[in-house]
Image (tube, rainbow, N blue to C red; front, side, top):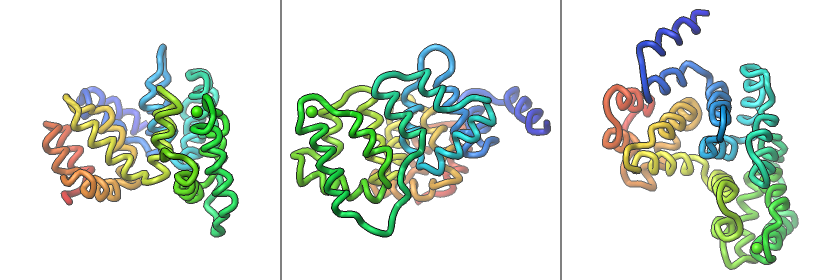
Length: 262
Ligand SMILES: [Ca+2]
């Protein structure tokens, strides 16, 4: 009740990106992700960019918590909403991820399985006419992340193109974006978020929705590591970039969440 009163007071006092940021911070990370997913599927049309970013970048544990919270908050199943709002192979991939059937990392490296999966990815894509998307989905939604990192290394001994180039050649649109997001996150999740932040701020009229979403959803998870990747790859700190590309109280709030310069 106190929270509800506070939220309505804040809604009255704030507007725009600052409002979205402050109200986002009132939620837990999983509540925030669940709300963003819900909003991305609300009404006619779908905000695929948000849907892809959240579903393809969260790990199994995060997705399981998001599903639980989603059911609590909206009395609906995330799977059902995703299935109702997407179609075709894009829907199949998102659903496979939301079902959270990914293996936990194992202490034993299974070289035979790594080779088998690398060859299967190649034979389902670059080697054949068309693409056997179902095989790609199965491998990318069910294998552990350390296993997949080795699979993508091995993949290069079969295919003339690396996994990301292969995705660009084989599939298009939302499916392409989803697979690319997955592979980028398997390789280095914090670098994926750093790149998204960099792009969003560099684009004309900073894409504040993306900036807000990433800062709010990662500030209690891995923002420090994202800062490190940011500085390493873009030569400027996240702090400096926020200073240059945003303004006003929104900027002050972002900088305070950022926590410091690097
Ligand atoms: Ca092909």
